Every structure is written in structure tokens, then in C-alpha cells.
Length: 221
Image 1: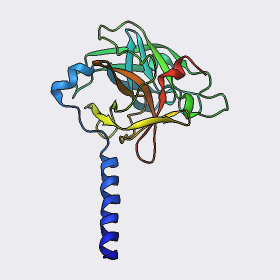
Image 2 (image 1 turned 60 degrees about the vertical axis):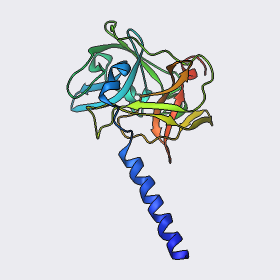
Image 3 (image 1 turned 180 degrees about the horizontal axis):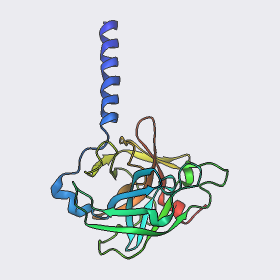
């Protein structure tokens, strides 16, 4: 009996690890048009090509993670080396706009290295996009949460999950849905009435899910 319990326990560990490795499920193609405000934040500089995820929160403003635009040390590519590719799906984009300027939370690198609690930035685009932006949560938001993002393992299709448990703890929004590299900067969304609004920005992979910065970090220290 003990051996059987040990085997079952091992299977559960392996199964949960496999789920984490898979990351977010692919968003069904028929739902993609609803989420065109979410896109890839592409960086192409000298000998480098990177990607994160970002969200239009105004016609010319893309919310993302600080480390996506400034690296782990606060020194990243120039604004014009970034391109926001909205609604990217298998080689087709709803819009494609270069960056013009970058705002990084002033406390993100105040100690000389990235502080995850303030890992948030806004990329201003060189022109406004016609794609409707997503609103920000105006107050407290409760689970279930959703997460959307592009991963480096599956860069041409948007991943999404909308049934994630989570809560704010130690100044971070901890969401129990798996994320992978490339999902950084993507939105954590919450239901506000009949619509979804952005409640947080994915910063890192936690032990069981995502660590995200609440959008309140945009306005409060």
C-alpha cells in the first residue's frame, strides 16, 4: 500500500510538472479577434533578437514588464529597436508599430538590480493604433484570473487561460496558472462586470504559477 501511494505521488508530481512545461493552452482561433490588444514586444538590436508580451492600454501605450525593455540590469535596447506586433497569429498581425519612448517604474532598478515588485514598464509607440485597448482594473480584483501571452516555445500563437486561482501576497499577484519564457509582460486579466480588464503584468515563473505586478504599481510606490 505504501509503495502504491508513493507511485501515485510520483505520478502526480510528474503530471503537474508536465502541465507546467506545456504552459498556457493555445487560444482558440475563433476567439483571437477579441484579444488583438495583446501582442508581441519584439526587440532587435546588435546581435540580439528577443520577445516578450505586451498589452495596449491606450492607442499608443503598451504595458509590459520592465525587464522586457530594460533587461535585468536596467540597460536595454533603445526605444526604436522595439516593435509591438498586435494580434500576431501564424504570420499575420493586426498592427505593427515601432517604439518611440519607454517609461520604466522608477523603483524597478533603484537598488542596482531588478526588483520584481516593480517590474513594470510602458512602451510609447511612434503612432496610435486603431486596435481598441484593454482597460486597467480600477480597484481590487478577485479570482478567477486570466493570463494571456506568447511563449518562445510557441511564438506564433497566443496562449491563454481564464480559470486561474490567485491572490495578492507580499506585494505580488500570485496566479496559479503556468507561464513560460516569452509570457513575461503579458496581462493578468480579471472580470469587471461583463468585461475583462488588466489586473497585473506577468513578471516571472513561480513554483506553481505566475508572479505578476499589480497594475496599481503604475501609480503607487
